[in-house]
Amino acid sequence: MATLRVAIIGSGPAAFYAAEHLLKQTGNAVQVDMFDRLPTPFGLVRGGVAPDHAKIKSVTKVYEKIAANPRFRFFGNVEFGSHIALADFRAHYHQILYATGAQTDRRMNIPGEDLRGSHPATEFVAWYNGHPDYRDCHFDLSQERVAVIGVGNVAIDVARILCRTRDELTKTDIADHALEALCASRVKEVYLIGRRGPVQAAFTAPEIKEVGEMQDADVFARADEVALDPLSRAELEKENDLANVRKVETIQAYAARQPSGKSRKLFLRFLMSPVELFGDASGRVTKMRLVRNTLVASESGALSAQATDQFEELEVGLVFRSVGYRGVALPDVPFHDKWGVILNEKGRVLDPESKQSRVGEYVAGWIKRGPSGVIGTNKPDSVETANAMLEDAQRDATMQPAHADPLSAENLIRARQPRFVSFADWQTLDRLELQRGAAQGRPRVKFTRVEAMLRAVGK
Image (tube, one colour):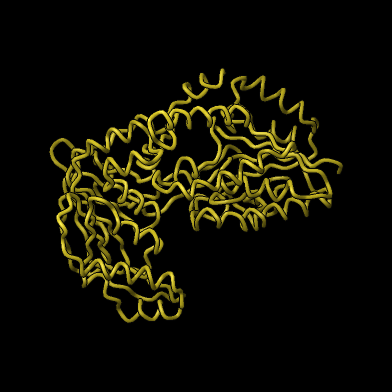
């Protein structure tokens, strides 16, 4: 095969790392067209990474270099299954790679979960990051007590953003509407609640250290909840992971802290699970019932939380759940509903009936393996899939498109979605956002509506 034409659906880290590996090949020339339903690329790096974590966002410099390859094209504001169907991709590409991430939250499945004031954490994150789909969400920040359920990276981001001061937030690229709302927030107490202990907490040592350095928020933990039981101590020793040891030591140090008079308080709670939310007559959440847990070892050796007969009630007016994420099915693409991923084997999409790989279809990132790891974890994952794609191409096990040329694909896209956004258009939008930020003394001021983005680039 002279030229391998690849379509990548999604433009987050997994998508770009796969594109990088494919474009590096010096044998068969590879051409990559990347699609995103939003006008903006970079997926969760733009819409998920916390505004006060600018260093993490700098990874986009790597992606910009990948996009500069003349064999790469970006088609933003083009939605798979809406503007272009699977059959269209099969007619224009040898291979398709799905890299659409895990877009929804898992539920807690407890009574009262759908009361007003109870939200998925990802909606709050998307809102404060300026994602157009969540621009008009409303969160009642007049409440003084907030519970964040979960102890992963997203949960601690939410807790930290709720505790930040105006001065801290204005130094970030947080969306203007969120900045205004958070600066007017009446939140005084935030409870970060994990069902297991400090050893099992999924946030990192730097993140838990960072919350202790906030300008106007004290951090506390309970000595009885952060003391290690024998099973956790054994797990920590077996792992021999210095970063995890530091994380636990930092958490335990918060149990010895005395109040310093700061106006907000962040409480770290462990070995607790919510079992019910209660609301008032208007249907707004007012209280949470929690059960105390103990840790038990499963057959695999992993420690899981087992409920006891001890309960506690916590008055809260706002709840964010961050207990896991799951992918969303794509039209005509095999999906494992229980796992929330596209059915695959090492990146090759599988037919659900025959369990054989579907020719020319691949998957990478969270929609491949589930929501685990950090941005960098996607690189080896994407390389594994890209290698499978190259292996299959070498033996001509690809789709046989009737129109395998770049112009035919572009003409189809122009016909179906004339307002598509190229990477050059994105670079224009990027410059405008940076200029808007500079005018306010901030790193960036984002466009948060699709129509505004399109007008800004003359679409």
